[in-house]
Length: 298
Image 1 (cartoon, helix red, strand yellow):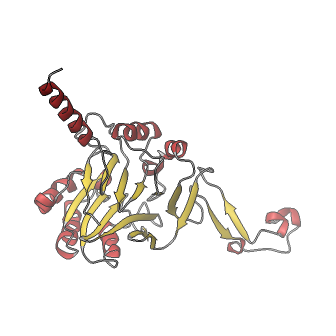
Image 2: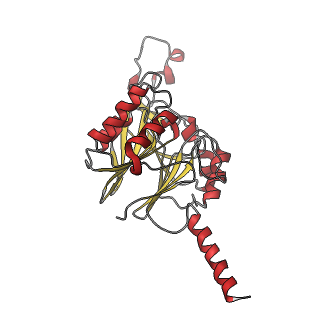
Image 3: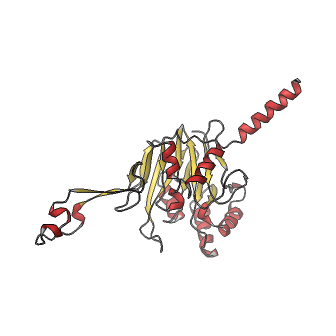
């Protein structure tokens, strides 16, 4: 074996290792699920999931639409889901929760932060005082025979999961926040959604699932933590929005909220991709499935 051949072989191994989405340590976002990609190795499907590594934390944000596709992409990226600090599920739609069965196979004990809803797929509790009582009814016509528990517990689609419900903005661990908002848009009115926010020395990194409450409202809420917004990534829910609405969002994020970098994906929509790329120029970040977005050091 020649020395030159050995050097070439080592160089190839290093290049392959560097190209892996999960290779090495660092602060980054790895896009694990989306419907567009530069990589022929990652399966494309409608939905969203991302691994966020920052400050020693490993956070999974959403799980995509299909457990088999999610598992394939996770394995292709070389991501180990058994080593997570916690998971954040943005909202109840299946294109963000479909991969939960795969996640729970790999890491059944992981803590999963999800929106708190009175009745919902993540489970919940509510005081039995929520319903009116009618004492004159015979016992067999009364809920719980007229003696309901003080707190009623409702089931979940994933009974083995360890959900922790979030109802309002919360700092989960130092520098890692979750913004909790409620949609007021037709079709998703009253839908609760969580957005992940990282506090970095250069400003906030905001990772959104679908932005049903409005990406502008989400970033405004995040700016209360720090007005410097370094990066906004994820789905912005503009796939069928008018050009005027997309332009309004672009102006608000770029000119009013001074978002430095933008990495739109998932339900943002192709017309929005085009306008946002034009608006942000070199600060526009491609974010198809398989992409690794580097984040600043702590």
